[in-house]
Length: 173
Length: 173
DNA sequence: CGGTATTTGATATGATGGATAACAATTATC
DNA sequence: GATAATTGTTATCCATCATATCAAATACCG
Image (tube, rainbow over all chains, first blue to last red; front, side):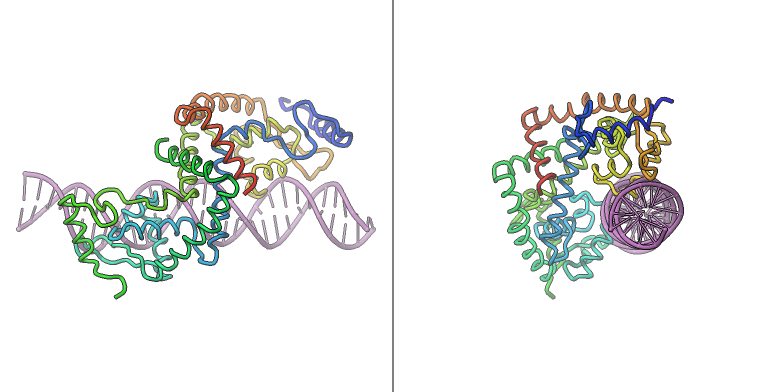
C-alpha cells in the first residue's frame, strides 16, 4: 500500500486537464515536465549527439558514409603507412570490431590493406584513389551542409567555444 | 598500381622514426595526427558523451543506475500519473524497448505499474518509496561527484554555456 | 641459436541499444 | 454496433560494443 490511490490520481488529472487548472507541482495536461533533466549535462549531450549524427547522415547520404567511416577516411588520409591497430586505437575502435568496418570500406574500393614488408603481421591501410575522391566530396558536403548549419544555429564564436569545451571533456575527463 | 610502394613507405617511416626526423606533412613517429577530425563537432561530441556517461556510471555505481534509468526515475518523480507511452515518448524511448526497462526497474521495486481505471489499456507508472529513496541518493551522488567534476573542469559559467548550447542543438537541430 | 612471450589481424560470440511488425485487450469514432 | 485507433507486449532484426581465442609473425631472452 505504499503507492497510494491510482484511481484518485488519474481521476484528478483528468478533471484538472478538463478544467485547465494548474496542478500542484507541474502542468499535468500537455507535455511532461523535464525537471532536473534539463540540468543534467549527460542528457542534453546525448540528445545533441543523436541530432548531430542524424544530420551528418542526411548531409552525406549521397556518399553513403557513416560518421565512423568518415573518420576512418580522414585519418587514413592524414596518416599514411599506418596499420589497422594504429588506426583503430586512435579512433577508440577495438581491433576485432575494426575488421568488419575495414572489410566494408575495402569492398567499396575506398581503401586497401597491404601487407607490410617490415612486419608481415600487420596490414598497412591505404586510401585508394576512389577513397580520396569520396573523402574530398564528403568533406565538401560536411562543410557546406552540416557544419554550415551549426554556424547558422550557434554562430561561429559559440560553435568554436562548444567544440573547445567538448574536446576538453573528451581529453581530460 | 594506384596505391604506390608500400615497402618504401614504411621503410621510410621506420628510418625516420629511428632518426627522429620530421616527416613531410606530419610527425609519423608517435601518435597519429587527428587532422580535421579535431574540427568535426560530431566527433568531439561523441567522445565527450562517452566520457560523461562513463563517469556517470562510476559516480552512481553504488546504486546500480544507468543514465537512462536515472532519467526515468527523475521523470516519474516530476510527472506522477502518467502512463508508459507518455514517459517513453518524452525520453525518446520507443514503447517496445521501454517494456524491458520498466520490467527491470519494477523487479527492483523502484517503480510499479498500475492499471488506470480511466483507460484500462494503459499502465500508470509510479515511483515506489524505495524508488524515491534511490532517486534521492542518486541525485546527491550526481551533484556531489559527477556534476561537481564538470564544474571543476570547466567552471560554472562555461558549464552553463555548454549546457545551453547542447540543449539548443537537441531542441532545434 | 632456440624456446617463450608478445603482437597483429581475424573469428566467434555475447551483451546492449535501437527499430519495425504484429497481436490482444481496450477504447474511440461514426 | 461495426470499424478504427491506442496501449502494452512479444518477437525479431540490425548496429554497436566488448571479450576470449587463434594462427601467423615477430620480439625477447637465456
